[in-house]
Length: 129
Image (cartoon, rainbow, N blue to C red; front, side, top):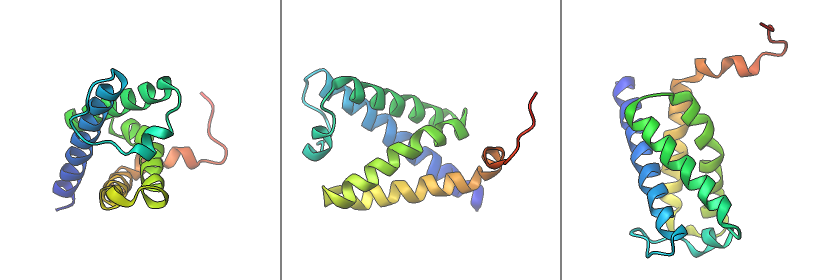
């Protein structure tokens, strides 16, 4: 059961971030996005390079999650992005708050599932090579 739930969470996050990242490139290129964007979120990206970096990371991490490669790395990169999405929808734009909560829960489950990969980050005095 846990492996199937991990698979569902991984694919859900992969598809969400791949689609959201591609949708962001429509905004960057001045085209009409195929998914509505939050005006409050777009106001935070005063400089286009921030949006380009975030959307590029979303596309790369989405692909990594879908093809099941470098999952802990994708989780590490997506964690601050998901935190920002959640906080933005919690405090500014409540329209997509249920999706933001779902993103937090699914990423949290993936983090729990792959927790052994992150344990070495918590070593007080790591061994040098």
